[in-house]
Amino acid sequence: MKKSLYQWQEECLDRWLSNGARGMVQAVTGSGKTYLAMCATDALEEKLGKRVSVKIVVPTSALMNQWAKALREHLAQKEEGEPYIDPRDNMAATQGASENKIGLRGGGHRDPVNRRYMIYVINSARYELARQTLKQLENGEPVFLIADECHHYARGENFLIFEFQDRISMEKAPWYSLGLSATLPWGQEGAALTKALGPRIYTYGMSRAASLKTVSAVDIFHVSLSFREEELENYEEFSEEMLRCYTQLLKVLPILDKMNLRERFEEIRRLSAGKDRTGRLAQKYLNLTWQRRKLVCLAADRVVCAQELIHRLPQREKIMVFGERIAQAEELYHLLYQEYPGRVGRCHSELNVQANRNTLERFRTGEFRILITCKSLDEGVDIPDASVGIILSGTSVQRQRTQRMGRIIRKKEGKERAALYYLHIEESAEDDCYLPDTGDSRIFELAFVSGQRNFFNPEYEDAAVQVADDMKGSGADDKTLREVHRCLDIGRVRGDWRLTPEELNRRIGEAVDVREKNYWVCMKRVEDKTER
Image (cartoon, rainbow, N blue to C red; front, side):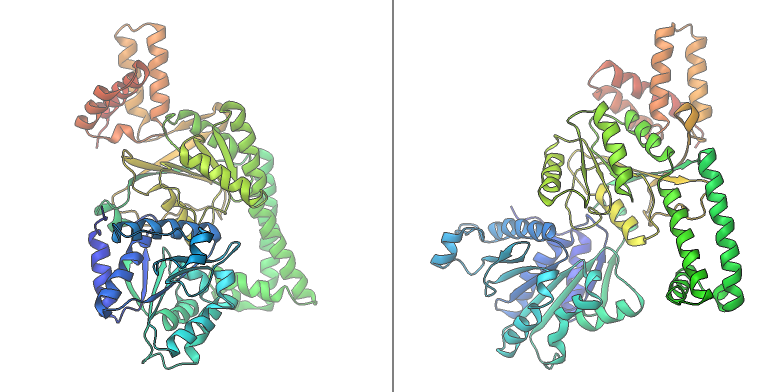
């Protein structure tokens, strides 16, 4: 059965068609951009009354394979009863297949370019797509380009895919385009993409996605950590030396103080190329910045905190841990593997492609419950059923933060809420908490107390103490009191005590064992004690 469109997708398609079937869409990760694009192809062909040549450009081979899978399923539903030939079937290719056949270019694939649906990895597309598109347009053939994760194609050699536009009258050409991204660029890059693909015609942010329930509701936990004593001393030394360098740079270039952070960094980086004293000073400032950032990312309590969080999360939850440094990811992987053998995997750029693919497949099937990664899964990998995200070390790049949240808010049957834990160093200037607009999502503040390997939740503590005191006052034995404290300790890092009384009663009734039932009874008692 063919899926129906969400309300936002219908609105977006109407707006896109009204704009001559050209334009860009910014939509939160996991909200259905791929399905929107496939339906846009159907709508365009219906409007034109003819078939079009569809070109899809993606940044990675993993994303190319996901598009191919999604297209096969979509075409099978659309063309029910008509035989479909898999594009990887070489015998079918030699015998002449259905015109709906999909061709792949990149990632080891070199299919003929005359297939109706062509999917290109950008590394292959940049040197051949423009030439192929120009030839088709000159012959009067309608071409529809879908530029997925289009922010990657705004500059450099990637922009060559639009080179044909300078060689033909685009006003008269049967050319149609759809750019897709969770974070469309602004400024010069945004202007370049607007000229190439058309204007930004629709924005579908997390707030609206949550209100329309096209993504899972999410609980966001800001978890504050502290440096250890030696780390704090080093951080302060780096900061003082950076201040001295910056003060001297200001004497040379006073305008630095009037720039925003990004402009200032770019200007100092430009100065660092010089061979004179100013250049050396700028280089020293950049080196200190890198060393301080490394210190923040690799603060020892990040790994300890992540371990303790995972200990307290239900065994049914699938967890993704995002880090910035491979060494840190490896450290956490080996620690967790000792505790959960055969249930933990990791993906990063120092592992070979097949190893990463195997890990992802084992995570999808549920063999792995915990997946630790660095930047390799920020884009282009479909992991729809991760319900918990832990940002082990932060990133200042808004696009990465948005993409990482998108990894855990995808809808899935049986997934009631997602949770995102953002670990940040309280004494650090760089690690300010920031997460994208998420509508009515619940936000919690936690502090990790390293010496006790425990957490402090200011909203929760008073009610939890009252529940424990009530049980002690009722004459409960030591075994029962230990069980109460176990349940309260778990609840401290989760948002279950904020559920309604009706929902908590339902969870108590659906508990699969005594320990789970005890937990929900304790959360119900905490909810009773909490002032809202």
